[in-house]
Image 1: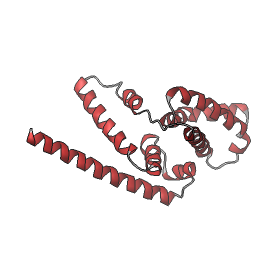
Image 2: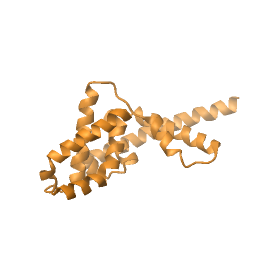
Image 3: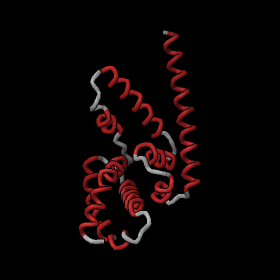
Image 4: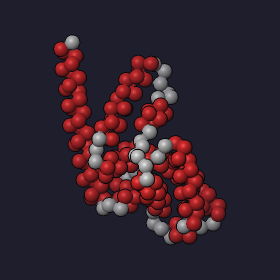
Length: 174
């Protein structure tokens, strides 16, 4: 892989890779982590051109880097910054508030999932990765990824149903 090919490859995946890393680490650490991951990818550039799925390899490298870093500190998911970024296009304050509350609720539901389910849910729903790509990044079989996503969705559905039933009861009582 030439320097130009590597630059083009890194430019193509850098935004997604940064978003991926940002979910694991605080913003300040994410920027540094992305630099270090880019250096590691550069060192492995010879292997990348021979790989069938070099993007998945890079995401797996990023995931492993972040998990090692998190072992030394408390986990962090920047839900507030994700919500703020997604609200920038809204005009109405009410719509913005409703969207914010709904999104925060969904992220709280995801955060309550077991770590594997949470991880694959973020990769599928937020990053838009496909099953084989998630499998490659996590080191799981695609069938196992499907099972984890199915269980995560069922758990989230049950949690949301409980929440909305509780909210409906509160409204009828008041």
